[in-house]
Image (cartoon, rainbow over all chains, first blue to last red; front, side, top):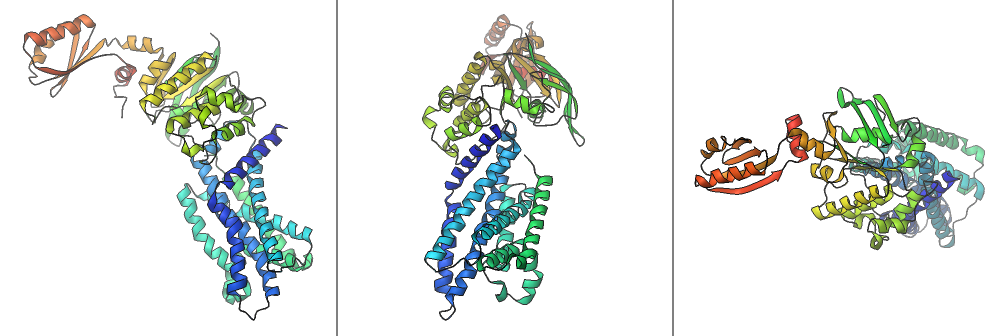
Amino acid sequence: MILLRQFMKLTSAELRLFGREPLALFFTFIFPVFFLFLTMEVFVPAEAPKEIVINQVTPSLMVLIIATPAIFGVPMSIVSYRQIKFLKRLRGSPVRPLAILGGFGLANFIVTLLGIALLALVAVLVHGAVLAGSPISFLGGFVLAFLSLAAIFLFIPAVARSERAAMAISQIIYFPVMLFSGVLVPLDQLPDWIARYISAFIPVTYAVELLQGLWLGAPLADLTWEVLILLSVLLLGVVIAARTFRWE
Amino acid sequence: MKTAITVEDLAKTYGSLRAVDGVSFEVYEHEIFGIVGPNGAGKTTTVECLEGLRVPSAGSIRVLGLDPQSAGYQLRQLIGIQLQEGKFPDRIKAREALELFASFYPRSLPAGLLLEQVGLQDKANAYYDSLSGGQKQRLAIALALVHDPQMVFFDELTTGLDPQARRAMWGLVGSIRQAGKTVILVTHFMEEAERLCDRVAIIDQGKIVALDTPANLIRSIDAGLRVSFTVDDPGIAARLEKIAGCRLSRSNGQITSQCADYRVVGEVIRVLGENGCDFRDFTVSKTTLDDVFLAITGKEMRE
């Protein structure tokens, strides 16, 4: 019972803290919708079939919403909480580590879910996107993508000793990851060698392919490779995080 | 007096560095027990072993009858802690921080009551980063008391605070002891230990070099009164040295003498006056724990 209370209180505290970060709010809720508008109204050539483009862009921008906090927000919070000794102070209380991990994770999950829900709403109502696949499978794919990306980038707080170091690592990997994983530029528009030798080694790529496939209604059997890769990435991320986690 | 903490031969090594090097002491219930010494002496490492936040390399510890390592979960229900340089997220409000920590314990005190106790009732809805240094430390105290613990640990509670905020903090620590709690106070600030603590352990280079009440420690070095002044003619020193009960030390024009009592201080002034000596910046001070530290370790406390 007390574990549940600790977990819920940590979740709500973390949600409140998120609500007070204007930059995080902007990148989760406003920027993706704005970017969707830009893509549809400015970037896409007038003669391109918009009903096809929107259904590719929508799931890939959802991955943007998942990956941005996974690369920036979560590692920065962890490093900052460690630096100010907040984690150590928590450890000096009888709060269960499971409640800390769960509360922090759930708060981030809720925020990300709200972000993609808003994007989906705008995509469907304003730009005429259609979810051709099963909503349940899509939600499942989203959860898998969220967990594996959140887990794998936990290597950042493992190697970064300060907020500055974490910020530097996040910034260095963010743009290549976003550009070469199909999030901002469709994979088929990238040079073949980049797609083969770079994109294939970025976990985010598989999240894009999985969500695009599920959005467009591809049968799950066609996506086993993506699911397996993301599950392995999740496992790898959890193992690394568990072995390298430091309270201080 | 019942024993609240027993520490025997505690040691903590980091590689070849012996941060804590065989420390033994007892803390009694309801006392304010000071752990003092210069930065890097091993004070924080020692209390963090007591709090269960660090694993000792050797020795045994019992805090409220519990081993901080094997019974850490139970112990954390009974102790409250404030960490050296510990902070909270910038955008958490004072009341929210208290309610968050309250949820960690089976029983807790209402946030409003705690805020009032530490004088932060007007800051309940203020963000943590908008609080002054003193207010942040008061919130840290309130957070340490949220579950009404039997024992509280304060580590460098007043470091970096202005004198007024420091005095206010001393008042709070005194009232916590009045409420029947045992307080362990870590400080490198000797005046604080002298004012607040019932007993003080002086730590230097990982070892306890003295442990007693502040009054006994001061009496033990038998330093009497410290008189210091500045003169233009250092030759006067030769005459002052003849006064019984007066020990002299000199650096340039500054003369410092240890006088056995106030009568000897009078003698010093008389000799200075009779010789028409022009002296300035004359001060008389009682022996402090700083002098005790100097006498025991041969080093100045202040870095």
